[in-house]
Image (tube, rainbow, N blue to C red):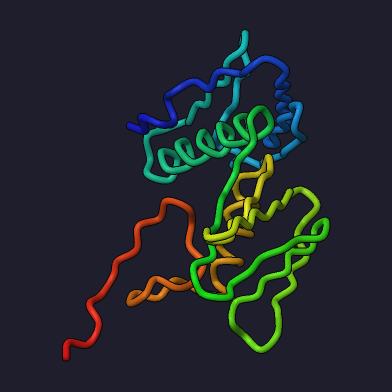
Length: 181
């Protein structure tokens, strides 16, 4: 039994859901998202809640039931509240700045890394004296924010000895002991 798939999704104020065949469109104050569903899963929108149903208890149907419920829930939450990821640059001389949608990262390589971001993702850089620079990514699309954050993190993953690199704010790194003299 999919416990996640059975939970109904409550619609907040100002969020519209349109089901057209096997395509679900969610529209809210922050934007509009669409998701194509498997033809087996049926979506019902009734008095402020969305429920998903599956035809049988086969393994594929159970998996798709929970998956699509989670995806639609993320869409509803995204267009109403939005999602934010914060990345922290740990290291001497590591800097971040942005001009519009261009993110400029100085990560100890010979050249700066300049990344053009999708227009759906809003980027903000915070640099305070004595603290590590922070890159804030905000969007209504959870998948896109996570993908962009993972791409930025992949430029310099945190290393286990000093912890230098790009990490998520609040991420706990596994540290190793260095050489013992």
